[in-house]
Image 1 (tube, rainbow, N blue to C red):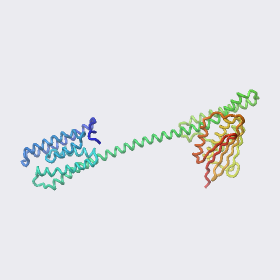
Image 2 (cartoon, one colour; image 1 turned 180 degrees about the vertical axis):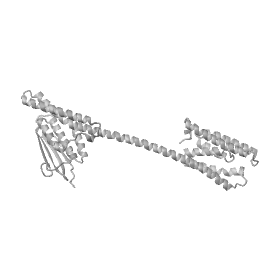
Image 3 (spheres, one colour; image 1 turned 45 degrees about the horizontal axis):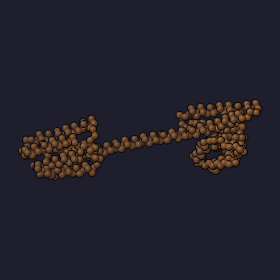
Image 4 (cartoon, helix red, strand yellow; image 1 turned 90 degrees about the horizontal axis):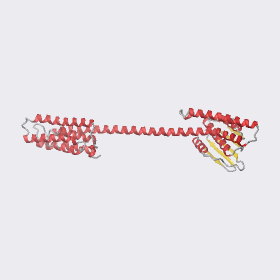
Length: 385
């Protein structure tokens, strides 16, 4: 830290401190002058020099913020012959101790103690041996030094606490932002899973009504019924999702393994030939799948049916789910691609979301396409007990 750092404009607090320091140093020097003025032990020229150096030392205190070490050295050297400069030297030493590292202030304190030797030579005190003067000077000087170092340590501690508080606040803001991003991502995934399936049903049925001009009244009525039911359910799901956007993400409506039959029935009602086969815990529907695991299975089958509806309309779809506690759970969805059917455009976000969801559950997901589309996933299912 450069000594020129004190060139900044003084604040009201700085002015108050500087005035108090000057008054203390000047009062200390004036009091000693009043006590020494009638003593015959000190020559008049020595007393005049003492007062001049004391006055200059007090004036120099106004420069201690700009040049603290230089002012401290000058005032401490002045105490070698001037008793009235003692107050100014104490203030200057305190300033250095409070604002500079100990490697700068401790040598100055040693210099202050050493000046008592020439002072005792120029200004001998009858009845006061040199060792007593050295002891008294050391006690006063190092008391000032210790006070200054304590102030410096307190300032550093407060600065460190403020820095830690600012860092903690910044980290908290980053964590909050990260949590919000994760919440938005999970909400977007849930909306994609919930609405994508039903909107794909709407698209298929609407397309059938558009291109099948020769459809019977019963077929048209059935398609219209599916469209109405799907649209109504999609609106209900959308209202529920929007209604809980400000609530914790875990409060979003979540399906379970038991809802697989309803999912397949809904697809069948929309005209998709779907076959679901489940074998759990050694028997068909013989075990209870945990809620979180069942939700992941539901989303995998749901996304697979949605993709089949978009990319292979009319194709027969078969879904297999089998597993047991301690062995994991296998999910496989297969369908053939109709001849001449081209894939419809898609973003691929559904499969990306499924891969992330499966990885978070501790499993893995794979798929392959060609003449036959196959989606396969394995999910861990911890053993009981």
